Length: 134
Image 1 (cartoon, rainbow, N blue to C red):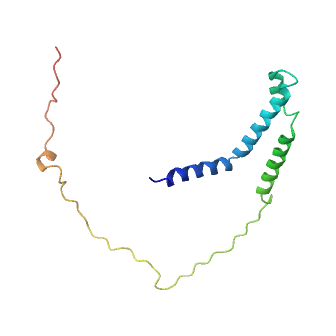
Image 2 (image 1 turned 90 degrees about the vertical axis):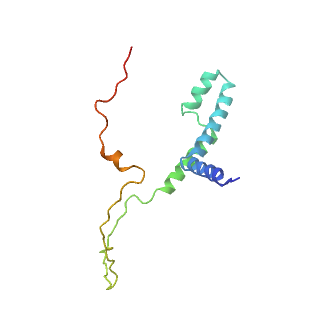
Image 3 (image 1 turned 60 degrees about the horizontal axis):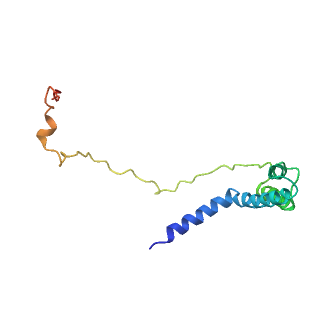
């Protein structure tokens, strides 16, 4: 059995997950779950969820994730301005390097092998038969 295709599919899915930042989303979900657990000890679950998601009460894991995400995006960014200087491109023509066009010859298709000649030249019967309804 060929296991190469499923393995390559899983590797590609993992690569797309990491490129899209899925690892940060998973870590943030774990951090939020821990925060909801911690905050629900001192109040209701509704208060715990609202405290978790309001952004005013980040835990240490949330702070580390935010710091890591910001450092990752700052490393990826290049300089804010890039100068692009184009140099004149010079093409040197070497004798004998030309490609000649192929010789064209007339070509005619023969009759189709799957359709006999009389069937191609006769019109359909007129009038077209219509079934009678009773």
